[in-house]
Image (cartoon, rainbow, N blue to C red):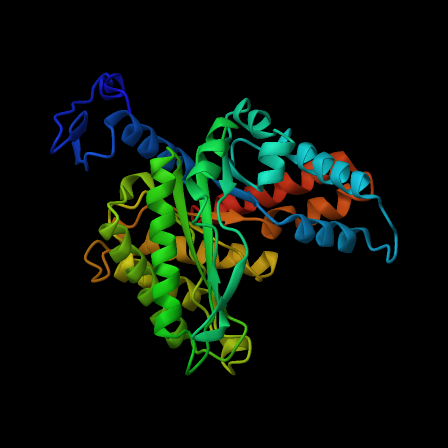
Length: 381
């Protein structure tokens, strides 16, 4: 990094022992965090979760995944498209929503590399004041010691891929690490260590490329784990991630986390009777016990949840924080903004209308869902 990158108005640099100073706030940096880059990372991370309520639209599905969802929404079994027609359909769907995203509710969009690099849609978003991001992880592979558990891939060529994404307009990146969870044997310690390590290495490399990292520990709820077990696993993996982030010198102020909601597994008998308020308290407890205070914000994932559940859970955790007394032993008032990074939870209804040729209806449906998510991220539903 050239020395002129250190000369940022309002910022001071005295390597080694660098300080980044803005107003009355001072952050001590490692020598490999040039102040101008650190300033940019912090500002982007803050912009993704501020003003409170704004969140991220996750459009980072693989090509096969978005094709499957479009076909399902269309509901025409056996209808064939050529590869060129499928590619154009994907492009048109993304463009329809990107050009009309409600900027009052949406701060950023996670793009798949096809959308960012091939369709070159980063400027479509940034020209409207929405921050483009990119999916960084690739396919998972079985963990050799525990083949039923996945280990996420994509670290080997990550830096050049993220540098290319930055040149295409991306300003943040996201890495998903699925964590299987049941009442007894899963996750294994090996799986937790592998995923925590990959997320921390990703975060450090992302910041090296000048992109805000979003770490995504996605704890599965398909099996028979109790809510207590889910809380335990969430706390353990998030704590492990940040222990490894400390080892790699990740600038936490310039990062976000995208966790799942702790919840009973689908096969646990308590699932049907667990209230949204209980889920909200569980989520707040997980974050209070495991999230470093420096992390800029939280953007929950919707995963396999229904549209209704994802928004209700988000509203519940924010309502818990809003109503927490200042003397709460969990110190919930110290938590950063708790927002959303939803895909299906935002676009499902819009996609149903778009495949039928109703673009205006698709845009209106998306805005309605985005407003609901915005209100939930403020605890105001």
